[in-house]
Each structure stands twice: as structure tokens, then as C-alpha cells.
Length: 150
Image (cartoon, rainbow, N blue to C red; front, side, top):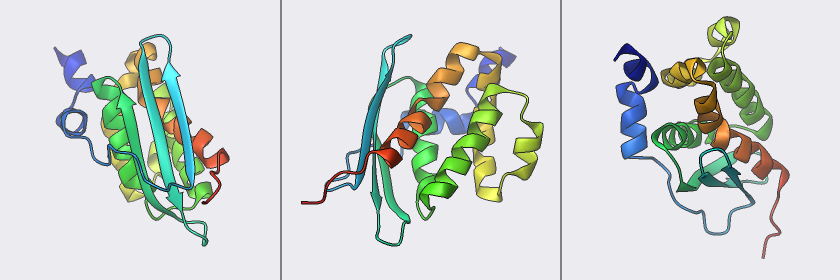
């Protein structure tokens, strides 16, 4: 019972059941799609980055479990207003948190990134780390995949 509470705290269940920013961004500037072959989850991430190199809009779509959906939902909320470099740093901190052994990463997180600690329970389930990081890795791919503007 305590394992399921760690893996599924209220915030994870809320974001999993009522995800924020689950949609496609029409006219996005960056896009990528990925899947987790071990469970069948798939996710796409679309970003709108302005000329000033700031993420103005972040969204995800696809079919995924509660952990992957909650992680994607939290990610899209945290990315808005960040530069691509800041988004990559946030990924590094989150990956360290999710994979375990991240006490120093947690301590160095800015206040808003601490919201991601609700997903730290996945570190006890290595297969679930892939679920939690799927959207994040897709976001990194999207940052490298600029779409031509029509």
C-alpha cells in the first residue's frame, strides 16, 4: 500500500486524470514524437519558441499511463517562460530525481521545479522511470527539431 502511495501521490493522480496542456499546438515551431516500446506509451511534444528564444507554449498529446501523462502535464507547465537551455537543465535535474541518487539535484532545484518531486516515487520502479521521462526526452528531441515556418 505504501508503495502505491509513493508512486501515485495526489498530485500525480490529478495530473494523470486531468492533464494540463494535452493538445497539439497549431503552428508550433518545434515538434517530436516518441514511444516507449516496453509498454506502448506514445507521446508527442509541440513547442512554440519565440524569436527571443523563450518557450511561449508547450503541449503534449498521445496515449500513455498515469505516470507518463502526469509527468508530461507537469513538464508543460514548467517549460513556459524558459529558454531551451533552461529546459535542458530542468530535464537533467528531473532525470536525476526520477532515476535515484538525486539528493543534491533536489537541493539545487529552483522552487517551481520542486513540484517534480511528486514523481520521485518512480525511482523505486526502474521500468516506471521510462514512463516518467518519456515526455521529457521527447521535449529534448523537439528542441532539436525545428519546424519550418509557413
